[in-house]
Image (tube, rainbow, N blue to C red; front, side, top):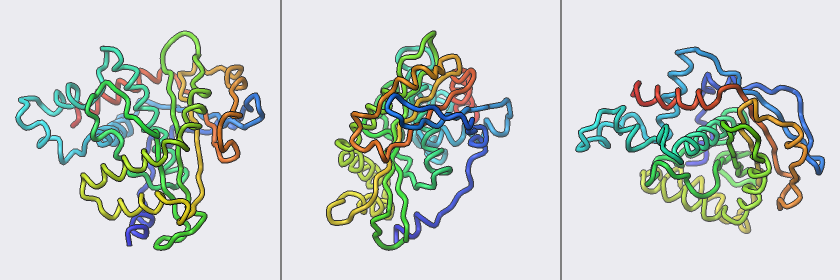
Length: 281
């Protein structure tokens, strides 16, 4: 059965997630909600960075498909990825799209490997315009209590990630993520349908059944977990701004996980991952 196969397929966490550490220094929002503070302590480890870049590249297209996709373009693999698939390194809004995609993919890794959800990983494959963000809920994950049958404790995770990796002053990324998460209840049906459509296009009928389990909460109830994550370059990490954030407009503040991830030179890291992802294809 689809649920059993997807739930039982365990893969080890990618090595780069070991760089994402909990600081143990939680902050509370203006309305008293706890915010987990994490730090991305990345290093110049070629093996880890290359594996991360490969994982990153495969969010946009599987390695086994690159040659077929670039056929007819007269482009090398690296040129195809840089010119067709990846957001532009310098031309606006390419850099900001890179930062946003990086943040979403990192949070997706956390939701999958740290929180134990299954993620379909279809969000970036069918991007029609490389320098645009993909619409809908940023990260969608599925978790099952008893594979093979419905359980009301089965969980759907809906996470929003907002990044600011450059600039001289913070611009409210945590509040933006909270506000985005508040809209996920409304756009959930559309986002699930979009995931299902991509799975249908890829012939993944078993995975489609997983999505279907969460499309009718009235007849097949389940729990919902929401998340709002801000990703910041360390110089933009401002506890005062985090404390000013509010969750009062969120429809499910009791089921809302708040996280801030910061790290040094994150935009440098982002460009390096895209470089490796293209050059090492």
